[in-house]
Length: 497
Ligand code: NAP
Ligand code: MG
Image 1 (tube, rainbow, N blue to C red):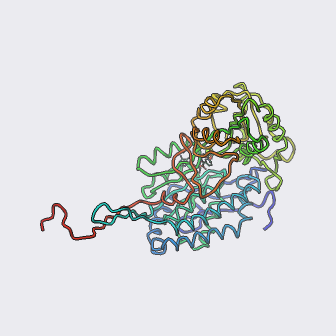
Image 2: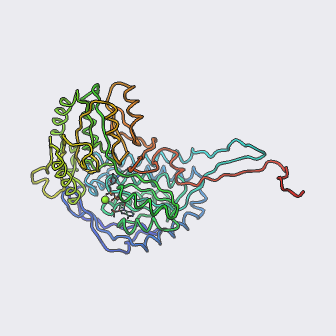
Image 3: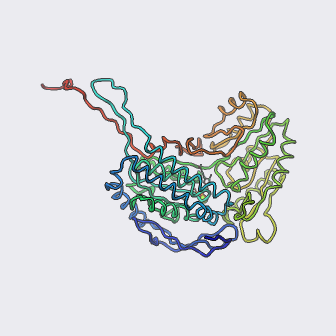
């Protein structure tokens, strides 16, 4: 298959009740952020579509061809899904590029990570063990796990295939049926994953994909009595609303939400590595990343030198066409999202910030139609300013000097979010002390934005609850059930015999 900048528009269908078909809602189109061309046309799902998909999923999951499978048999399907992703890796990467405008090198990495996720959960699925707990009487005690039932997955637009794989793979490994609601504007990856899963032998109805609006499809999924868990990745405002609805039916959720992550540069840091880390941490994915390192705290002793090197490195970043393998930063997702980033830059200036680099759109005909914005660095902002407190979700970094470690830690933690942090230093004791004091779900030391599926991920504070990844996350999709087996005929205290 040859990929061009503006391929013909593709008609997409939803997978509802085991059938590929047009959903019942209105038709809408999705657009390539590079040039705003239409890449797909599809119908939005309705509340009735959700009800139908969930009811079908509930009956499908109880059938012997799913409920009767042993863990190693489910695992075999997951391995085949991983292989299916790998066999179509290039197409998937290109489609994701068209869906959300990320540079091709990045979407290739996301596709590879999705395949790795299915492989990892295939292996975990057949090696997880239930436990026999130490008996404290004349009985054998066991702690077993059984699938929760039908679960929902609601995902954002910034890394579709990876965030969908992180939810679908452990849920299938657990023996659940999954209904996925991808972001309205990036439906394609979930749809392609479902095709691959079908080809891998996943029974009909065990995976459904319903594209459409969060306020309709997502809301209906959340409220449906047969949906037993929802895994959500997205903004803190929507996550809070989801948490409230889930609480009304005592439904467990995982909420992977926003961030305003600090990166700390100590005076003894290897400055070249730290510059590269900060650059990658904030500007890869055009800053549209929950873990974007958007506040860089630089020790005063090295502040000027670091600033000089960072500006120079930022000016060399290659912003441009996502199809090019040379491109490091593509466009933002939509024009309206770019507008919100521009509003934040205007706010930053009003709050006293000084722009060191960027602060505007790139110029040139190749940028005219797309939603491009240049990597932007502020200094002179107060950590209390809104620009430093709120998630911008774009390529905007605030540089902040620090001197005393206790003040540094207080400033890093003085934020509603708590997703991730980076520390650049050569001294293990300093790293350990600071890392322990940071209120975040992840700490990166002399690296940033590196990921492994085997390591749990999630946030604290307003960055969310629950964890994804890690083999034990399969248990998030399972009920824990305790068994007590009497081992003799000893009468119980109230026995009449
Ligand atoms: P979003 O607006 O919160 O949307 C996320 C998903 O929720 C979309 O599928 C959306 O549907 C759906 N949704 C919206 N309103 C809903 C409702 N009332 N009920 C149920 N579902 C609803 O987030 P986004 O703008 O797509 O993505 C950016 C955000 O995601 C950022 O805040 C970022 O930090 C966060 N994020 C977090 C992580 C993490 O792991 N912590 C990873 C990536 C991104 P629509 O398509 O209709 O909007
Ligand atoms: Mg949104």
